[in-house]
Image (tube, rainbow, N blue to C red; front, side, top):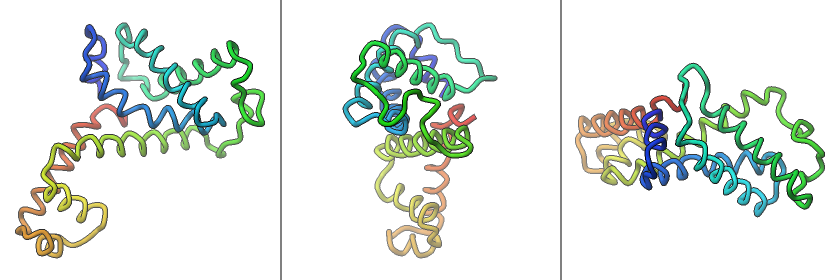
Length: 183
């Protein structure tokens, strides 16, 4: 979210950096693996990207008209290219250049879908600790599992109204967490 990006501009804020790293590590790692890097090389790239971001984000100015994830993907790709120039032993398996990596017919749509999946998944993992287990399960069973509120209420020992309230609380919080991240 833009509020997180603003916090990263302040003098070192460990909570903001921890949240940022938690949200984006799986995504950057996934991009590295998709590019053909082996596990250790992908982990090294993730670390190198965060070193770059630690240097760049304090002066970064978010433009709502542009995509942060595209900028992050560009930083990741440029870091990968720079790493390749510095170390010949970091080569893409079976490809000489990032543009030669086989991918889906619409790579932009694939990047977008992967980004959304990672960000939503990470936000859910981070948020889960902020809710009581019954609240979380009530929402999860209704939204993800598609179960009727009455069945979920009976199973969890709640009223039907409490199940709907749990759903609203969790989904509103998810919307707040993801505000500005999926634009």
